[in-house]
Length: 288
Ligand code: GDP
Ligand code: GDP
Ligand code: MG
Image (tube, rainbow, N blue to C red; front, side):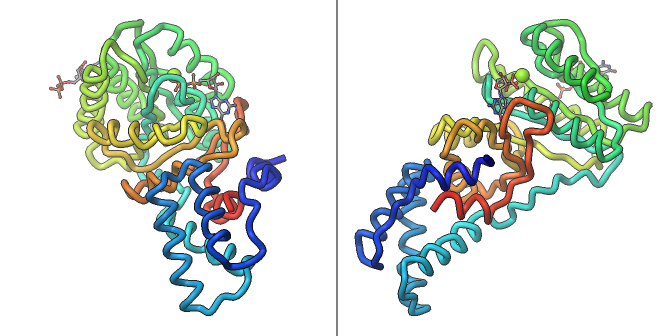
C-alpha cells in the first residue's frame, strides 16, 4: 500500500455531513494533526470558507475537493524535476543527523544511473569514517563513482576533489553528502557555507540543487530546521523522508508557505527504489 492510500485508510479526516462549523473545525483539526501548523491550517480553512461562498458550493464532498485545490496551489512551483541542465550539475543534501541524507543520495544515484547518467558521489560527511563507508556501499550498489578522504578531512576539500573528478571524467551529476552534526551548530553552518563557496568558485555556471532533507515523523521541528539551514545554504527544495512510517507530512505545507520551498521527492523506505517524485495532488487528497 502506498503512503497516500495508507493515509486515506487511517482517515485523518472523518468529516461532518454538512457544510457547518463542525465541518470546518474538523478539517482544520485534521490539517493540524498532519503537522501543517496552526497558522497555515487556519488560513487554508479561511480560504475555503471564502471559496465555498463565492462558488456557491453546497456539499462537503465538493468542499473537500475545493480544499485539495487550495492545498495544491499552496504547493505550486512544487515541480519535482531537479535542475540538471549542465554537465556536471551539483546536488547537495543538507539536514540534521539521521534524517536520511546519505540514503537519499543512494536512491537518487540509483534513479540517475537508470537514466543513463554518469554520477559521482562526494563523501562530504567526514565527521565519522562510517559515513563515507555507508556512501561507498551505495556507490558500489549503484555503479556511481565515489570521492572520499579520511575521517576528519575538510569536506570542502572532498567536494573540490569530487568536482575535479567530475570535470575530468565528464560526469553528469555530482551528489554531495554532508554532515548533520558537528561539535556545534555554528561549525556545521560554516562548513556548509564553505562547501557552497568551493562549488561557486569551481563550477560557477553549474546547475545547482541544495536539498533540505526532512524526516516526516519530526513534525513542526522541520520548520525550525529549514530556517536554520537556509542561513548557510541557498536551499532549492525539500526531500521528505520516512513517509512510510508516518501519516503526517503536513509540515511541507508550512515550509512551502513560509519559505517558498518546493518538495522534490518523498522517501518511502530504505531501499534503492523507495524514492518518488512528489505528487502535490495525491498528497493533498490523502491529507484531507
Ligand atoms: P543521514 O544521517 O541524514 O545521512 O541519514 P541516513 O541516510 O544515514 O539514514 C538514517 C536512517 O534512516 C537509516 O537507517 C536509513 O535506512 C533510514 N531511512 C532513510 N530514509 C528512509 C525512508 O524514507 N524510510 C525509512 N523507513 N527509513 C529511511
Ligand atoms: P575559502 O574558505 O572560501 O577562503 O576558500 P579556500 O580558497 O580556502 O578553499 C576552500 C577549500 O577548498 C579549502 O578547504 C581547500 O581544502 C579546498 N581547495 C582549494 N583548492 C584546492 C585544491 O587545489 N585541491 C584540493 N584538494 N582542495 C582544494
Ligand atoms: Mg549521512
